[in-house]
Amino acid sequence: MKRPDARLERILATLAILIIGVISLVNVVVRYITGGSFAFTEEFSVFLLVILTFAGASVALRRHRHIRIGLLERKLPAAGQRVLILFQGCCGVVVLGMITWFSGVMTWQEYQWQSLSPGLGLPQWWYLIWLPLLSTLMLLRQVQACVERLRRESRDDT
Image 1 (cartoon, rainbow, N blue to C red):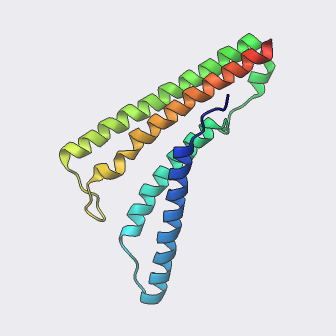
Image 2: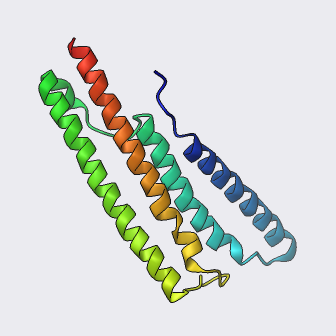
Image 3: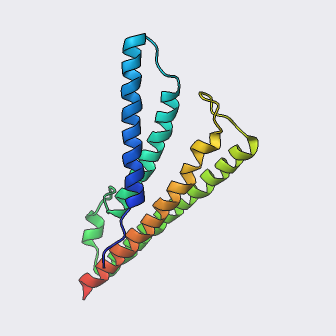
């Protein structure tokens, strides 16, 4: 069975890095020619970097590329490895669940207060809505990765 990949997150990360590159290049050229720069580029770049970070982390979760210390895992017997993998997965779910919850609350508050961004005056929730959405995707990828690792461990036992 082919494991589901993080295609949506890969597309988001690719678009984010591409747009960051384009607006940074245009800003440098404009600054070189005119001596001034576009005001919106920093606000958009920070926003896109958050998307890039969360999307990239989600892809890394799905592909088992996050940093973890495998020494203890390798030294444990098979049953201990399963317990440790489950513990790691649960810790990830708790942390990502908290990020999802609190970023959702923060986004909802910004929507209710009708806060505007400092640079462009856009609704602040436009930037923040991506946090709970992408952390929910990360939560899904965490569960997928944990289940896949547990299945692989149980196959290795037989």
